[in-house]
Image (cartoon, rainbow, N blue to C red):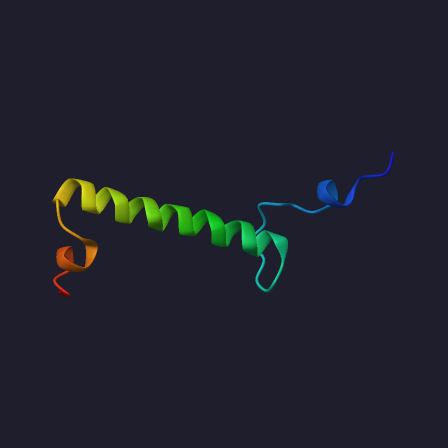
Length: 55
C-alpha cells in the first residue's frame, strides 16, 4: 500500500524555508502571540504598548 504525500511528510516537523510545515508553525506561533496580546489587554485594562511603557 502506497502512502499519500500528506502521510509521507511529517506535518509537525520543524523545517525551515517556504514549506508547508514552516507555514503551519508560523500560523501556530502567530495565534499564540495574538492570544497573548488579547490576554494582556484584558487583564491589565490597557493596550500592550502602554503595558510595555512604549506609549
